[in-house]
Length: 387
Image 1 (tube, rainbow, N blue to C red):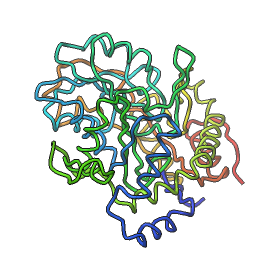
Image 2 (image 1 turned 30 degrees about the horizontal axis):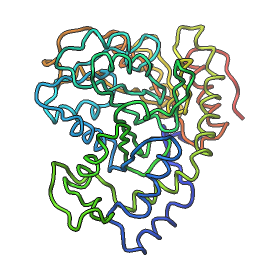
Image 3 (image 1 turned 180 degrees about the vertical axis):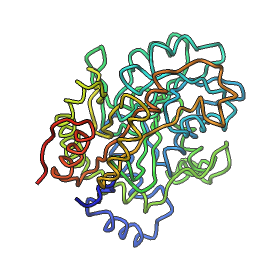
């Protein structure tokens, strides 16, 4: 079997055509036709009030920190098991990060441990929808309302995924927080190479979000004819991407349903083929009743760190790329002296034991079966045979 990469970008076919059209329009610097089409798609498809494409999800997170008016000493609550950008965005504004452990049954934030770390300095809660699967947004929103603090969803992995609320209403992830962010990095379901998006659901942030997005100017209002010239009116930066990036993303969005269906088929094939591992104490993804599945990641939770290391080596020897994921941020070299000393055993277990298997749109059934076969061989379980 040829090497099976962990991830492989999927091209739908219209990316270069749309990019060519953008170049030939002589408007390639951003906030043009394709940017507007992408904004309209997300606003119409998911009910987001305002969308702004960004050069990365990191940029979108940094915009949320500015919009939230994070000041030195403000506290922001988030999971320790997440990518560094989730924390960096707020550190850059002077915030104190308060990390929370993962759930025992899922790498996402333990919603039940959020309220105990809230103080009078808490400004925001930043739930991260790990593997695209929803956090318990009913609980998080109730806590936020009780303490009058902002909710900022890090939905980097959660495009086209939903949460089924206790009120019976199903809504897209990214539509619950005052603000939310998405990623279109090449490893995500929908891609633009690099790229991200800010979602604004609270109307009080809409006007300022455009200003921050356009380097602190009211340029967007100028282009709409609302002012006769644009000027520097606030802080900001160059957060918007070029039209080339937007054109690439626009082509991807046309095939969103097809992409998601193919990823779900692969995810389900893994789940069916590896479910026997549960009998051996190996963890598989847990899907809460309130969460739909966008098939962003399929992972295993090994029984020990050494077992995980050996499994990754075994798969690599079999021409399969598999990887661990995050290192807990509270124990990172940058932050460990700033941490308050609370233990986070669940997150530590995912740090040491979680392994992600290859998952990309054009994976064949034969390739998925080969990965399943090799994982089961490692655990000395009778496996399917691949022709």
